[in-house]
Amino acid sequence: MNLALVVLSRFANTLMLNLSDIKQPSHYHYFVLDDQGKSLYVIGNGQGSASKQNISFVKGKEDLNEITLIPYTFKSDYDLNPIKWLPKSTKVLPIVFHPGNDSAVSVKKIESDNLITKVYYSVEGLYPEGYVTKMVLIDDKGKVILPRGGSEILIDPETNEFMAEFDTLDKNIEYKVATPQLNDITIFKEYKISIPLK
Image (tube, rainbow, N blue to C red; front, side, top):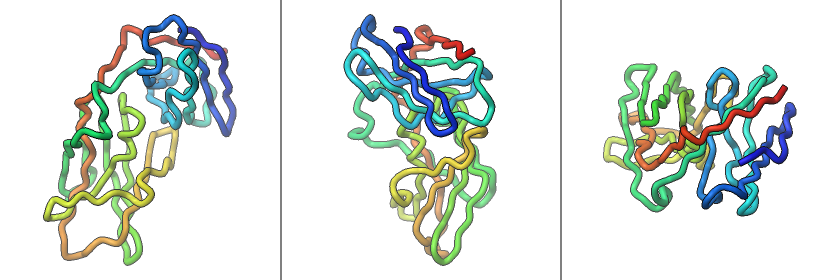
């Protein structure tokens, strides 16, 4: 695997990987880490042809000296498998989840009015693309409530802070927040590569 192209700017950060020497390259996704080892938010992963893949990610304001790529795969089609949610009460904040892969999701603030409910949370560790959009609420009957638009809003790339918006909630119901357990992923740390940018 080698780097065919890198584009870094205020608006777009894209890597193009030449994977012609890797077996089944289209099956891999990639975590992107900065030179401090912090996972960067990936917004496009694995796009391209069988021999080349494009990875788009968001970085903070500071320039990067290098980035590290760590490949991973899903053991099965996680979109078709039942999701095991990890619900927790919203009575005491912050709420910290440890869903797996040495990752953590911290719910720091919940705001609600007559129009909308906003859940603010941050993500640490190796948290795969796609799962990060799966912050949900669960009502007292176990019904899962998905966020508006089905995805999160990235608030601060420096700290990987996000916001999920939900429709108005019933004030007479006690809701829980939940994130999925990460038990369907294989990480290949032995194949990680570091790419100098300066």
